[in-house]
Image (tube, rainbow, N blue to C red; front, side):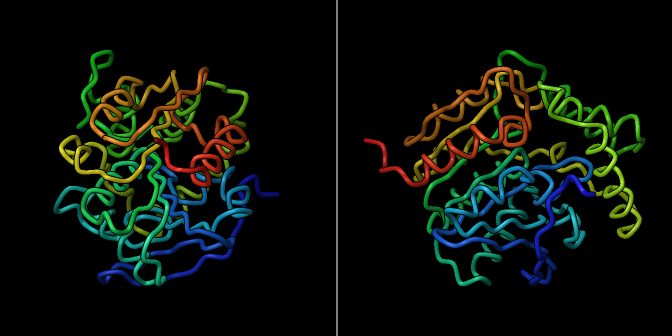
Length: 280
């Protein structure tokens, strides 16, 4: 029996790129953008959130270019731009003029670009451990330990490195079972075989996002794990310092994969933020 949820997948083409996506629930549209790394996909990174959030929202979860079942494309420019254009095109294809947008890690970079470049698309914005090496940090080597691990895996994949990447995602190791890692590894092997190689590592490509933050007009919630070894906590402080209408929520004893590690609390926080009145 699978530990990962299964949802009906749909397909569309955006700018010549085939995108696979999940579209479930009713209510205001909520676009969830996943992160990078091996076995990354929309359903995998939000496996503990889609069903809960779909009770209140129309939840749209794409596999971004180069991940999951979507097409492989070359990174000829900043990956956040490629992903933001894909997200904008997907919303247009679905007839959605404006949506709430949540981005995790690499997806947070895409969400920043989307809110800065296509502001009419974004109602409220949620950034989950995102920003990558382009955001300043005073407390960590940049790129971080986790980003360097993903780069090492991309250059020479192995099961040992795969396990290390996933174990480093979380602080609460009891939340991440061996069986789940086995299932994710099987998915990684399947998708790599079909695309004839692992996807590139977008987190390692220079991408100046800090200058985009001050352009964001959407009300923004920044969510961080205190013990994140991929995106250090003070990058969250830099983000709310730059985004005019923003707030920061920090989960203690929590790593990078916040929405998985503290799923119930995360889901409640997101629902409260998206359904509550705008902050004064």
